[in-house]
Image 1 (cartoon, rainbow, N blue to C red):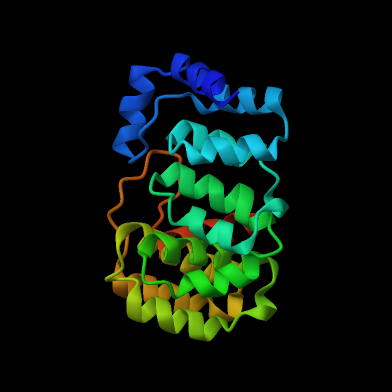
Image 2: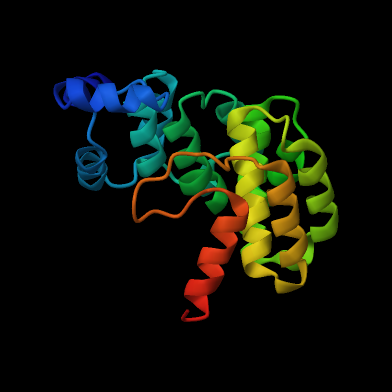
Length: 219
């Protein structure tokens, strides 16, 4: 079955899609809409998902995140898997489609945020950002801002991006911390010059915060 699916994914490879993806660090050329269509046909198949992940193929791992049963993974298994998510899209889908649905998510959030591997730590910060919005009472927001202020500027790219997202979300969701979040963003200038397509919101935290707050207020 795995061999058949790998062959199907290989047949969906498009050189132009791969070229675009590789500019973002993702080594596959499968259109994500077509990949989702394969997942929809397969439905939930957890053992198959494990086998697809074990191939190490990026497209196969993306598919695995869509057909697995997130609650069936043990905490040790999830920890091992996050350390294998070197392709950014695999990392993103794994955190959002698998870990966030796991009963172990909060334990992993606390463990991963302090992990010395920046890829693992970025997963911890992504989980923390969700808590900022959905369950802020379990967090110490001033302490989070202290860490961001001290460490974000020098963090590796993927970790820096996750910390910056957390900074922006604190500013967006918590008016009492908004001024400090904006001040940290302005002083650190992380992603200030990030190229942003027309019609998209800049990831520079002060601009991001201001734009989303404006939209929510109907401005």
